[in-house]
Image (cartoon, rainbow, N blue to C red):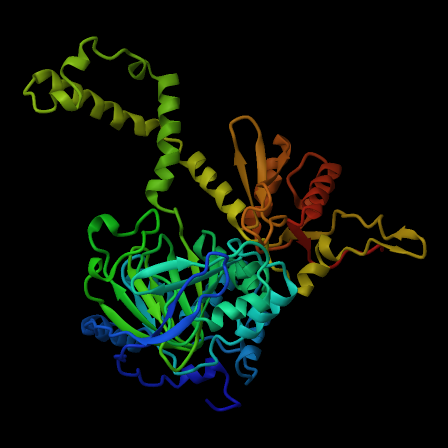
Length: 542
């Protein structure tokens, strides 16, 4: 790639799709684990690997989609390369007025040159997608081995909490985590001995990963998470398995050999939980057999079995961005149906009528083979009640329950300097010359305000009170904090809805539909104090 050409400009040239790569068997290091958690001794050993057939039809279809639906990748106009490009992209995104549009643009960058509409129509939850870039710098700046090392040196990384040490040799998957903090001296000894390293929540330590995920979570409407995997050359860290998340495998450094397999049955399509480790004999032949190089991406829907190993000549660093865990129609109905049944039993006498006194004599498994007309009548009555139950289904309330869980799962927004300066995080109140100054800075009727992000807060009711749930005080560590909410007075709910529905427009405090000017200012100051809103201009004492 030319030094004066950005990663995005590079892809405007629409380089030819490289031919599908078949790879020979990598060398695998054999590991012996010590009971005290010390690094296992390793000797190199060649392992013969069967070549799986490549799904040529799928690859041909991918080529057709890429030629017909090629999206011009977003350009930052800087002419920079690598980390400069990603930094410039994230900086440019702060200038986008609507956070949902920011999320769409960042996701488009992630899967470029594919269009997101085509992706969600043809691939999402359906089939894998391979994107070859021939551009090793495309994702540079997202994460690196240098940052991995820096985090080990400067942050409190704990084995089993933030970092796993793993190996997979001769069909056996092992975890080698000692207790305590993961320090470079021990971690890199494990790595040199042939162990893979998995950082479980890089967003807690990397501001760039945090920024990217906090934006993408608005695209998915579901928590966006990540793991980072660093694998030594010639080794494999994990057994074949499938996941319960939609996975975007982003190759950052080196290269990695991947084999992907169809779900073994319809029962394992779009699973609710991850699989156990599989043996090679349990998974059949791969539908995809590829080597990812830096700059490439592989998308895997949940349920697709996969395994990755390193070639003998290069290490691998990749980050897996994930989303859509337990976000199915069934998960929503798990909230709808119990509430619907409770409501139906309160309001409809048909649900409170007693069962037939003799139903145990003709129903149940022990009576399931009997030909008894009473069975047909019983089952028909149950079916009628289930149909009637839907009229009591509190769908909106169940969606609000899902929304509360999502807001608890969310990362807090990663604010730009401009956003900080116009929010509570940049307020001018401070200690100076022996006293607190600028404490009296307050909202006024003409102050213009808006939500700091489209999805930062949501009104939910439990039937008695209305609460505003929000994400700004969440931790970068998953569920470290309890769900955050504030009770909203009944007379202020219209004003909060007004703010939510007017995003991304700034509105004057005086325009809030509250009973008095005092109420308008009081509500605005409450939301400002929680970081939920910011102002069009930084507040001043004037």
